[in-house]
Structures are given as C-alpha cells and as structure tokens.
Image (tube, rainbow, N blue to C red; front, side, top):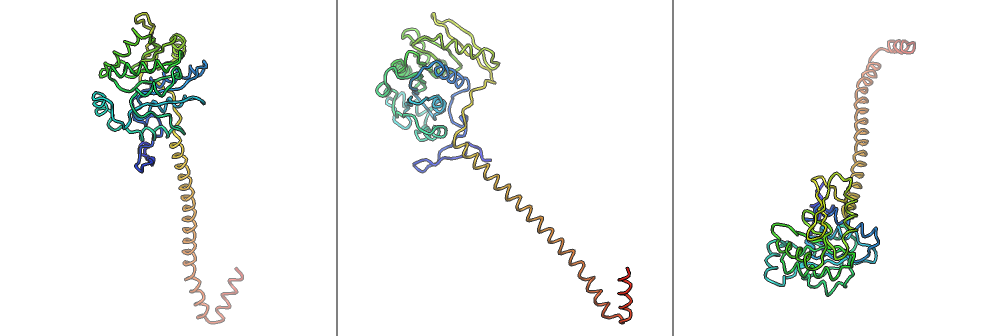
Length: 333
C-alpha cells in the first residue's frame, strides 16, 4: 500500500499537493497535549452552552485549524488569519518568515483543511492587524494565537484577542516559554500582570487564559485529569493567580480526529480493488483447474488409443475361427 503522505490532491492551479489521511500527516507542531487541552476546553464550552466564533491567528499548514474546525457548531464562524504568501509588513517579520516558513502557501493550507472538512474557514490573508477590522468585538469563544513571535506583534495579537473574545472566551498562546521566543513570554506575562489576563492552565508549549473567570475551566480540567494514568496536574500561585500546570507522559492519548474523507475514499477504492483482485484470482484458479483436468483427460484418452488400435489390428490378422473363439471366451467372462 502506498503511504498516505505520498497521495496527492490535484490543486486548482494544476500542481499536486500532499493529501493527508490523518492529522499526523499534516505538517506542524500541534502536539498531543495541546490537542487534549483544546478538546477539553472546547467541549466544556459546548457542555455549558457557551456559543461564539473561533479565531486562529497564524495557521502554518493548518494542523491546529483542522482540529479547531471539528468543534465548529452550526451558525458559528471560524476565521483564520495568516500571511501565507503575502509579503510581511516589516523587515523583522520578513526575516522570521524567511527563516521558518519559506514553504508556507495558502493552497497547501486549504488542501489540508479540505481533506477533513467540506468547507474552508473564512481566510484573512495578511497581517493579524486585519483581525480587529474583520472580527466583531465579543464574538469569539476561542482564540488561538500562533503568528509572529516578536514582542510587539504578540502584544497586538493579545489586544486583538481581548477585543474579540466574549467574557467566557479562552485564548491559547503558543510558545509562551520556548527558548527561541522570549518576545512571546514577555508579552504573555505582561498581559497577566498589567492587562487583566488570567491564567487557566499552562502546558509544555501553550498558555491558556481568559479575561473572564478561570475557575470553572480549571475545575473542569481537574475533573477530567483525575483518574487518568497518562497525565496529572498541580496548582501553583503566581501574583495571586492560580495556575493549573498540566504534566503529561509520553503515552498521552490525544483525542482521535476522524480520518479525512479522502482517506476513507482511498480505503474504499482499495477495498474495491482488492475484491476485484480476489474474484479474478478465484476465476483464474478455477480456469487453471479446469484446464489441468482437461489435459489429464486427454492424456488418459491418448494412452488408451494405441491399445485399441492394436486389438483391432490383431482381430484383422488372426484366422476367423480364432477370432470367434476369443469372442466366445470374452463373452463368457
């Protein structure tokens, strides 16, 4: 079987793009721990009747966007903002794009997303400064920030998130403590200390917070973690804020995302082709057996013919009275 990641999807422009079959086939850094936290927080919103739109600032190849789209409810809108192929607006951002995301294209993102969903989200191609202009204040229940790692830009993204989030809304920020992203760390903790951001939990790579009350979300997460063998948590206090720290092991079981419709189509085609091969093999086997039986019958018949000819020749050459005697003996036997 051909590996799924080598399957291709014909792009509108005629080029071939990778066709993912599972979320793991989509390039990106959306780890199992964060898949679990996204799922918990979004599911808690659904259970408690929190409604609103979804927003992602910074999409790369669409791995987290594919996951977020799974939690989109009827009547809600999902907006994704990314530069994709656009030219960055400043030199520092251009340098970061050139170093880290040179292969990023909007077509690749859309191909990945459509492998799992029937419709694309609303796509804003450009800097995240577009968000306040295009997303209504207080309209969102979940915002994922994973765009620029530069301090000034992250501060702006946090300000945009605060503006568009509802009081029950959650913001998730990537790389809040990564070695190569001190600007993200500075912006996150500044927002915590001076701008009203309140922590819900932190994991290995993302910070989860709200400008509302974090306690209900923290309690829900604690209840989800109790009894699990693949992760646990502890509570710490930072500047008067309770922070839930999630600690997960290597065997953490992330929620399973349904396989893409392309994958299911591929599997159906493979099953149909296998059934055709099986039927052909069965037909060929029966035909071979029949041919072998016919050949064996011909050999048996060929072995009898010389003996019959010899008997006929002997009957013609022997004297008549001898032939009559032989026939009488045969009839008696």
